Image (cartoon, rainbow, N blue to C red):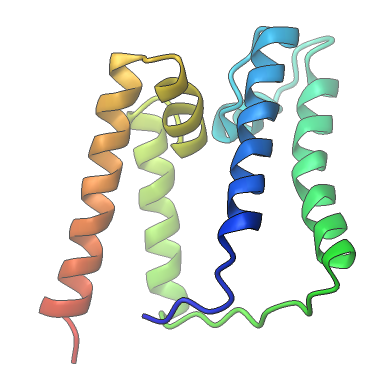
Length: 144
């Protein structure tokens, strides 16, 4: 694996902005910035609840687009080294894990650890260990 164009300063700024957005959502709206939970509760929308969810999710997209143009960096080509069936199964497994773990990486990893939630710490350790094990198995045991 080659890390290309890694810039610690922009990574740190991005991390700070994610933390700030998560803290503000919790302080001002009393909500956890777990993207899976925000998305899953859009359908069916609760009265008066959908607007902030749409703004939050829209901000994720708009923020990326604004950064892309403001930074002057060309869009990187995204290359998938897996087939569509493998990507589909992987996506379904991530979705199932999100349901079983009652949250996603942003909800548990960013917000939960920030609140020192034992459940979120356990969930984050579990999905990080599972991810590392998956990479090891697929790269070293199943590699052609």
